[in-house]
Image (cartoon, rainbow, N blue to C red; front, side):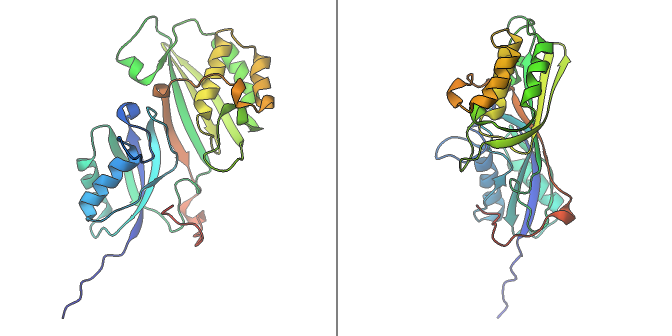
Amino acid sequence: MSQEVLTPERLYRGVVEYDGTELLGFQIQSQGRTVQGEIENVLQQLLQRPVRVIGAGRTDAGVHATGQVVAFRAPWKHATEDLFRAVNALLPEDIAFRQLDIAPEGFHPRFSAIKRCYRYQIGLWPGHSPLRARYAWELGPNLDIETMRRAALPLVGVHDFATFGQPPQGDITIRQVFSIELIHESPWLYLDICANAFLRRMVRTMVAALVQAGQGHRSIEEIAALIQARDRSQSPPPAPAKGLILTHVFYPPDEAIKHDPTRSTHP
């Protein structure tokens, strides 16, 4: 009798772009469309078996991405390029893989990451722009951008950011913000924020605080005091999700990623 030859599983790593407008975030939910759910559905169609996809960041409902990183194990017997084309052919219009390759054993999209970057987009045009508003917080032309830049300086560095968000798990709220850059390209204002990791809603809450400074509602000293307060009740409501984009996740070189048998790629 001939025995069926089983295709070995390989660990795939992908960079995913999505328009989060109609999505309930990255993480799979009991109801509603999510990035993880849509990708897992497509992989199950192709492989005829369940596949668990994990991501670098659990973006909230309405948040977009150009550089979300995912990983999954799959027994695909054809070329990686064929899997890349097949997945993209089946994914809905608002989700697409930009890259797909084989990851080294031990790679984990979240735990291997050393730096994450988000961009927040603010619209400085007067009135309402229906097309541009899909990806921006419309605030008009009267923000004091230079004051916002100065207010951002105390937020850079290693701090307890408990005022600005909740930890995804556990209770550690200390993070290292590497940089906050405000780029004014009229009629847009971009806030590029990079850190080793973020708390839930941390970026949007930081943006909201800086906007308050730019509108004259909080002083630079009051923004700095928010860090010392370590009190979520003192934070402003987070900026709208539609202006936020996960742009990059950075990792060590593949040869520096070590296999940890205690850490599964299937959480």
